Amino acid sequence: MTDLRLALTDRVIENLQPASSGQYFARDTDLPGFMVLVGKRRKTFVVQGERRKAGKRLSVRMKVAEVGELTTRAARAKAKDILGKIASGVDPRPSRKPDGDAVAPDLPSIANPTLRIAWERYRDGHMKNKGRSDGTINNYRDHIERLLADWLDEPLSKLGNDPSLVTVRHEKLTKENGAYIANGCMRTLRAVYNHARKAARTLPADNPVSAIDWNAEHRRNSALGLSDIEEWFTQLAALKNPVRRELHLFMLLSGHRPEAIRKARVEHVDFHARVLHIPRPKGGEVKAFDIPLSNAMIRCLVRVMRIGRALYGGQSREWLFPADSESGHIMEHKEKRSDLSKWGNDLRQTFRTIAQAAGVAELDVHLLMNHSVPGVNAGYITRNKLLSDHLRQQQEAISRRILEGDRSRQKEAKRQTRIWPELPSRRVLSVLITGMD
Image (cartoon, rainbow, N blue to C red; front, side):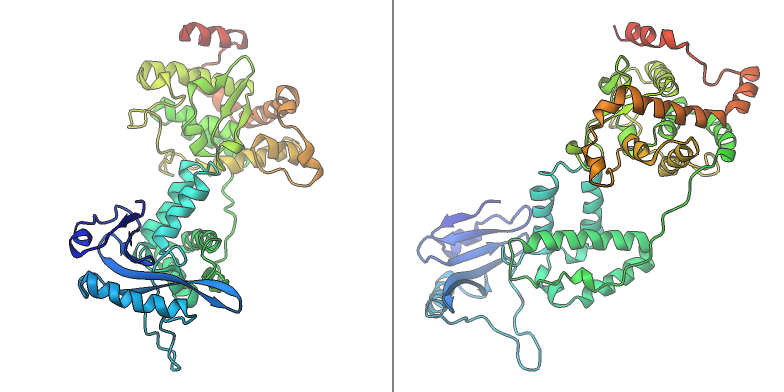
């Protein structure tokens, strides 16, 4: 909510609405620097003034009293006395006693935000403005609003002044949620704190997350090898839902992240240019790119569009991988491991592994998977100029190598039933265009 300017009285303060999120100020028009900080559950009399120290102007904000402890008249009188001291160069805020006991808590403000306020500013002022994907934002939200929920209304200075709180929480999360989640949560907290400190320069410069001992993380070696492909295709063919079959196959053939493929739209397929456009991948719109389509990938999309029209008429007009869900597309790509041993990022690793076996250059694999291109010289490569010929040829080579592992299974399947019927390449466009008229 936006700040207000009012002539503060007991009645006016009583009628101030609680903040729907975060906090806001109701500033007194009669005494500049006197205000009420309104949160979700309580209201606090506050003063803010400026004093000079060593030729510099320093802002001082402090709590006067909780609303209800003093009348507005008494709080204004106390605030006037405090503001007079500030103007004379005195900092009236309580300091720590020699024995180290704090005599007053920090007051949440712009200069010392709560974790909730810092998170909201980071989410809206950084992540959304930078075009971060919904999946990334939701992942950060889960860390802050679920795993650190009891800290939401704590000032960040409390964590900055006592990093042991962060180390203890990291150890607790490691035991209860696992090493990877604990590390991920701390990385989110680190980012939020760093962003907050850009405006709140009084926060301790050392990020409290720097005090933790990070859990060891190892890349999961979950890729399929060429010798495993045939068994995986056998498992895939046994899945009952044909849309899900094609989803997993396309993820294997493309090597891309599950979220990007699950949310692929019909309008983003260009069969003439032989590409699938991904407008908002991980990293947001600035990372938008086109996936070059091999013949096998085109046949996969043709099949799933035919199947989608038969099973999910309305949803299939918008989504490549439709489902009877609230969103209209497949929401969850995971399968029981007993049904399908590898899915999701396992298939992304498999694509990378088989690309190596197919002799595709590392730089080309980076481009096909939309990874950051390593090296200064490689940064001068224009990806779109390679799409129509070179990258598509490399994609074709990887698809052929993947399907070689399924060759013996396909021969047996054709003798029994045509699970994945082949479409002649010349008919691909005519089938699609006719069906969409």
